[in-house]
Length: 131
Image (cartoon, rainbow, N blue to C red):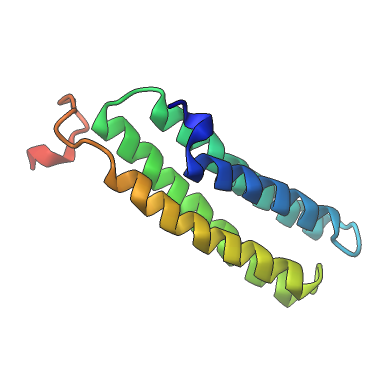
């Protein structure tokens, strides 16, 4: 199965679409909103990109590195929905939808990460398991 068929990847793409719609709905265009929109899109776009990257090789440490970046991007995107609410950039209902989808993504993400084979790894100078 290719990475595009993975449920976690499909959900990540949905999050990109929802985030794009949300930033397009921002009420006024100013520099602050433009920066928030840019950061939200960067975080949303990292999700499918890093899944594809992790699936590009079956080396455990490479997959875990990407998983950490995905986790951080998803958490940051979720936090940014609260900033949007505080700044009253868009309808709070849209932000709740995105948070709900991020929560669904989190469950799929955890299942995906648990499928990684920790025995299929290579030792390199950055390997934490040496300590």
